[in-house]
Image 1 (spheres, rainbow, N blue to C red):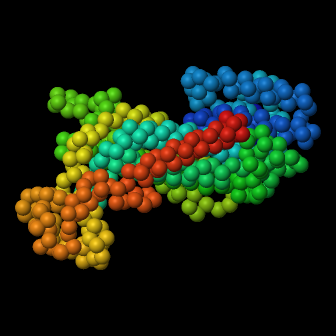
Image 2: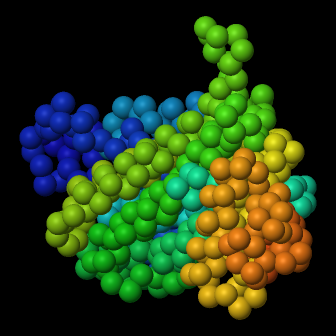
Image 3: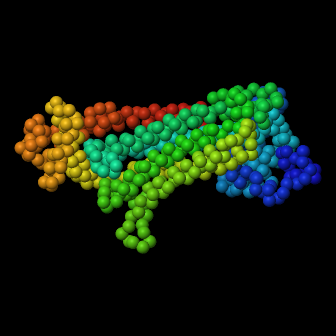
Amino acid sequence: MSSEQQSGKMWSGRFREPLDAEFEAWQRSILFDWRLLNEEIAASKAHAAALKAAGVLTPAELDTLRNALDTIARDHSTEAGNAAVRDHPTAEDIHHFVELSLVKLVGPLGLKLHTGRSRNEQIATDLRLYVRGQIRLVISALLAWANALVAQAQACGDSVMPSYTHLQRAEPVLIAHWLLAYVQMVLRDVTRLQDCAARLNYCPLGSGAVAGATLALDRTIAAHELGFAAPTVNSMDATSDRDFVLEYLQALTLVGLHLSRFAEELTLFATAEFNFVNLPEAFSTGSSAMPQKKNPDLTELLRAKVGRIQGAAQAVTLQLKGLPLAYNKDMQETQEPAFQVEFVPQMIALVARFTSALQFNTERMRVAASTGYLNAMAAATYLVHKGIPFRAAHEKIGNAVRYAIEKGVELGDLSLQELRQFGDEFAEDFFPAVTLTATLDCHDVIGGTARERVRTALTEASERIAALSAMQSQEAAHAGA
């Protein structure tokens, strides 16, 4: 069989026998890597600029190729265009598709573009561009959610709720303090993704198949055009590195984990037993059998999605384990897990809108925070200020709580005479020390739920989100997004 009979394959010169038809269909990656068309176009234009600088292409040829590449991107920018790429009858992968399309538009000049280039470096570049773009989308969505959390915290003002340890009521906190806990998780997620983006932001173009390009290409040209910090420094590492895919998926796993924790708390808080939150109807569904139901479908699905994300990360871990240097066909399998989490930015955007629509039953939460001896630690602290060692104060207040439970009253409802059976240190100033506001404000430390501390924390969180948003905009502009 001649090379021409091998359906225009990029590697057919060495082969004489046709591929097994079923194997040929089975090993094609165009069915999923069609998503990388824009990245492949951008990388090809950058490579063409490097070829022109090396004297391989004339200025006119460069313009012709770049215009043709833009035409390919434009012609396949719709859903129908995407389908045409995915369903191409002969293209093995996105690189092959672009080459075939280029030759169709400009003739033999299209074949010139592959000079000094390997598909190994192409896919490494395309994937970096793709993951970098996805990170931007995720970070933007996370910052929108952080803003929604802060806005709710500001709206809640000094409203209180119980905090929990072991799912048992612990101490009163401001609702804003609880919301800001999730803001901190989001901000960690943002910086984690930024770190990932910084580590992957090096350009593999010019690495060749494994040992580096065989032409004296100026690799900084392509790197600069694509918004990378610099070229990669080792060709073997560049063509076989998929750390960035795994790191991205692992970072997303933590995003999903934080979303799942938020979802679980709201699912609980929306039950009749808690009745802390009214679920927004726009994000809830009903029962086909029970007319009264309003089900928390959004939060339940959020809990489940982390499994898909973690599954993708685990798949890539196992795909990379034990691979020798450099490129191996196994790496083709690292693409689909990255594509399978494209739902994450939309999911976070939904959570942001859901968060904005939440309505807290603040009176119910205040009552829950005011009963059940949640001021016991503040009471022990009162005794500490009287010079009692904390362990002894803990024992005295524990005895007082047991007495109050048996009597069916709160600590603040005990008389001074009743309190003094547990210690002579109790005085009239005990009662203002264990009010709800005093219990909040005794946590007057950085990171505490004292009202002034939370107001400061809200201001600082707003400023940090604004700074991260500005940084995100600058980085997107620098990368040519």
